[in-house]
Length: 601
Image 1 (cartoon, rainbow, N blue to C red):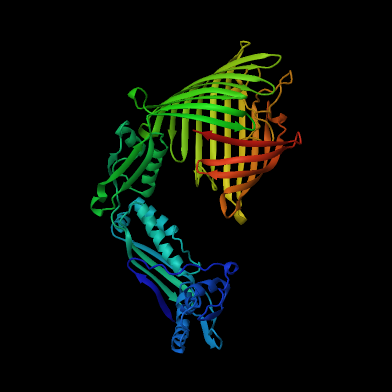
Image 2 (tube, helix red, strand yellow):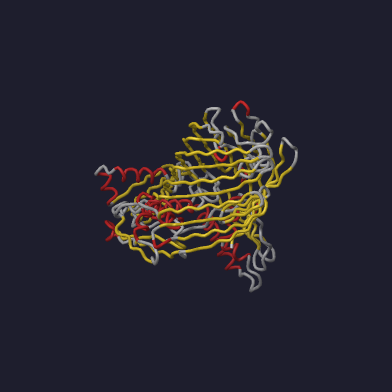
């Protein structure tokens, strides 16, 4: 049995030519002044050979002295070996290569290549030595989990085509994965790829010298001027001695960046094995200004023009608090809202107090609302939890009646995220759940208990041919006796940008005895959307097609979902997607433009 050693190294192989492009992008260059090459090879290999053969390089030369017969003979004689060497990097170890010279001016060299069968990965062996192996022998559960995950995520699977670039990339990414697990000083002790040419299989063997497991030591914080180091330690959310994995450090860095306190934040460690038992964690920060004012001008096709003013103070009265107040004046909606919260405490909890006043005018009614909220919130990369008590008061006026209602509720909300990107997701899902229990009292003196349930599930998934899919399901219900009037802001309405496009904001709702819209006790909306970049040269601009359906009602049996369908454009900006949609309402057969544009100074 013939065997060829393709690569054996203590530190990996050097990078060789990459995978050739498809034949559809391959065009032979025009004949040169010194030489013309005619290449007869399968499409996937033609570009590789034309880019790297010596005779191909000479073909690209313009001008100069003609090639001597001696030099041409040397190039022709060297070509078969060069072809075989290049094809071995792509997994072809038994090519048949024919090279001949034909008369002409300039000289013509013809290369005919039959690559033969492609070698595929037959077996993969992954081992470790050093402290990680010692942990395995001591039945360390974490070391076993890391090894299992490391082996499972090896990129070059059994049955894959064996290519030297893929082999090099697999080793690089696999070693990086081991380092990301906390074995920061890991290196390759041995790597080899043994090819059985006759059997068409490559056996891969790698052995990593793990080095010590790095564990977090003291935090060394730089750049603090206004805020306390205790705030930074709370945002770290790990104890001394925790494995210093890449995920641990990146999550810490992301919490610093999204805390609203820092303009820049970086977290890192020194990969010095002598400090592995308690490696210092370096934290470099640049704080945001203590106070910040934002003025916003915007326009929405649903709510018209608006102007807003927002003030944020990151340490009012010298206390570890954040205060935010926002005023918005629009055509249909006017609001005043604010929140005061503590800086993140242990386990990332924040105590908060919030308030809100709003006035919303629609075609059928005007609702004035006020609320006061006290509670706690925890933000982690995957889950946001919020628990609070809230008092709500609504005044609803129509042309014929005036209705007032209030409520006190205890609420528990969760947002679960499993997304590839929290701002511009293309894969994963997000689930929002809300649960409220309270007492309501209306202007007629009636009162009673109620429960409010709400859920919204949104999924994202790549589709074939470069498309991306998005789907949404939204359900809500208020459980209460018939005589209990729950405040309008706690009931449900549908319609608008984030609900059912093609209809006005909150216009899909049941009507009262006078024929005016009122909040419903049940809610159903859904949406399916497919999107794709408009062109490869504009990857951030997408077109989309969508269908929405849903409405609100007093009972599930009364639900008659309205349907809207249309086309849209998306700009995937660094701060999130901006959308322009043109939707047609099934009920009215009229189009409606949904546009959200905002400028912040």
